[in-house]
Image (tube, rainbow, N blue to C red):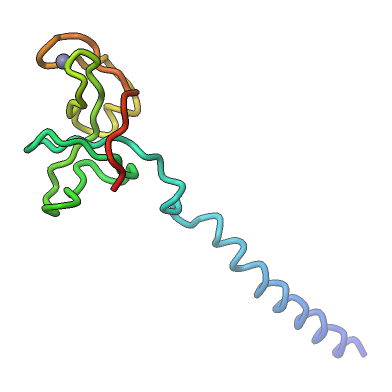
Length: 116
Ligand SMILES: [Zn+2]
């Protein structure tokens, strides 16, 4: 009788583990595409700006496929987005970035370019 019971316990354990395993792993999955923050990227070649999900820096240009897009910040005087370099610089906000033309601080918010 003890033998039968331990088999039963084992079977239940296996069943529980099968259910629990995917749950355990789901917590470690990478961030889903639609959970990524959208930021403005600026093409260092053409100066075009794009609204893209923050993934890489530099990011590939949607048209040419070349890694020429870097995170950008907005100059209210130029009324244009300026490339600021790495994503770390943008996120940590260490040291304000100035417009290369106006020498005024760039801001994070501005009119958003077309989404790709
Ligand atoms: Zn400017």
